[in-house]
Length: 415
Image (cartoon, rainbow, N blue to C red; front, top):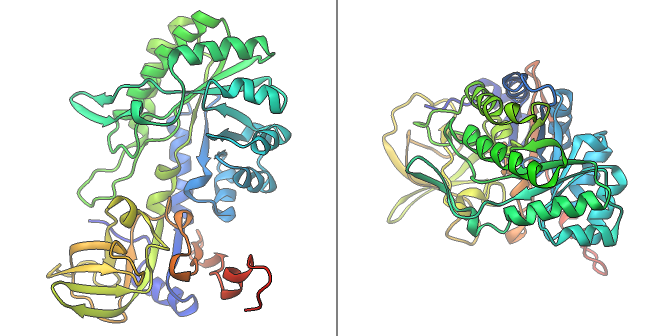
């Protein structure tokens, strides 16, 4: 059973001040997660989490993570700009992009971000459009499928990201000739894995690759970036990943592979956007209408504009009815928004307690890839974001959009 991090009385007070829908984040949970991660990898002196900005590009959230000794992983110029303005220094910014425009590479170099090259062809491109840094990373794609035992986790061969092993080795040789002094290896092989075995298995594969690459190129390997992929238990019957067990598994792989091969000084980096934030965010929405046709529908004031994942991926997000968390789930509903699209559904045929107009619904695990994937279809405006602070008070950290925001980019018209 999933329990909201905000109780009914707190939520009633918040909703009385801030109209729904809005995204609500739990500062206490975010800080505890960051501290647990840092503790799990404290065996590696150079460890650093580079939070994936794309998951939750909200300055107040990024500042909390900065205070917890996290860096940022950026994928665009605007993410770089925001991170730089927030005070993240060059070494605290990882720039992992693909099909990258000239100006984005140039800006990354200007602020001293660590560039993670996605393609072998980008070695020559980077050298043409800007200077070559002394530290650089390359993204690896092993091809084939990535499996744990008999379970296929993902299919890297179909991914547009990364370079082959031979390309990676050649890239290192070319970059070394261009003056690079320190190198990193990065890889992302599977998304949202709910198993403690994934990260250690990924680490072992990358550690073995690192030994081979260093032998072939004689470069100084500075770090290995395990990227993301540690998921969250969206389903109520799933067991959450245990970061302490995961960190210990990576340590064992490190000491079995890297240390005996003279690479015991290599830093470990992570980019855990979903794991860090998803469980610590809720989408709060109010029931506006009930409808009965061939199904029973609960119509809410949020829509796919506020949380796209169910419409895009068919993703499950647990839903609690505030004040009825322990009530029997006697009714079956589709929970829907108001967009002119039939996929605008937060839940299909979901068992819930009896819902009535005016109820407040809590949609769980929206702290990552929730607000950030919002859009403005049907001229719907993006919602506010609120922070439930460690002292129990609530702070507005992003106001809801207004009509003027929607019209702001339309020149020559007066709305």
